[in-house]
Every structure is written in C-alpha cells, then in structure tokens.
Amino acid sequence: MRQAFYQIVERIPHAKVVTYGQVAALAGFSGRARQVGFALAGMPEELDLPWHRVINAQGKVSPRKHTRFHEFQHVLLEQEGIVFVDGRIDLQKYRWDPAPEEID
DNA sequence: AACTTGACTTCCG
DNA sequence: CCGGAAGCCAAGT
Image 1 (tube, rainbow, N blue to C red):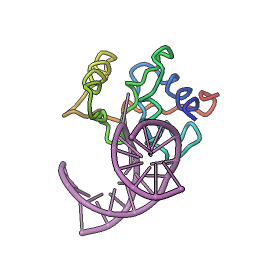
Image 2: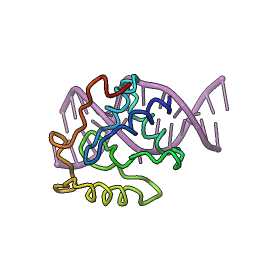
Image 3: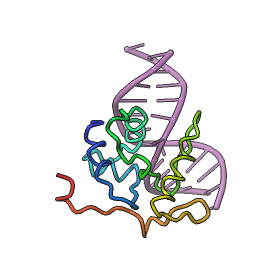
Image 4: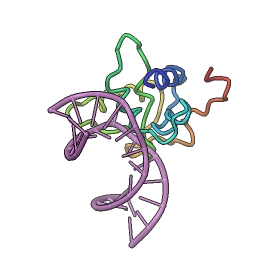
C-alpha cells in the first residue's frame, strides 16, 4: 500500500504538485488521502522521493504538528519555481495530470 | 480488542 | 472565507 503511494510520488515531475487525494486515487486507493500522508510520514529517506510536491486540496502545504518540515517544504517548492500566492499554489497551473501510461 | 490520532477531502451553514 | 461534521483507515496506545 505504501509502496503504491511511493510509486506515484516518485514520478511527480519537477515544478509540479499533486494533492493527497490525487495520489491515493492514482495509486488505486481512491478516498484514502489520509493514508498518503501517513505513508509519507514514515517514508524511508533513502528512497529520496519528492514528498514536498504533495500538498493538500486547498493548494497549501499541510501543517505538521510537532515539526517545521512544512516550512522546509514551502522553500523547496519555491526553489523549483513554484509560485505561492497568499500562501497558496495555483493548482490549475501546477497540478500534475499524468496520462495512465505514465503510472506503469 | 476498543479508542485515539492524523502530512486529508468534501459538503453544509 | 472559516469552522464543524462526516467519511476514511493504518498505526500506536
């Protein structure tokens, strides 16, 4: 299950983002957005996934409770050229919209 | 085994 | 636009 999510996340192209719900759906687990977040929380760093390109449906980075990784995430996204407007990303513009064959 | 948590989403007021 | 509630379900207590 986590595998499926990782597989999707690792394909997110540079300067693009996807929502948790989208990752879940693409992985074949529609409706399990929370599990995506959970999977990423315990992600082995050696996989080196672009986890920062996964955001919530409101086009914002989801705030963590006990860490400041969301701030780091914000910076990483800007470094990729993604523009934040009022703390938000223009999903219409940056959302990754993969063709079925791009998913394996 | 019951209960709580949480990197979520959507609908309703 | 913001808060609450319901739906979701793996993990941790």
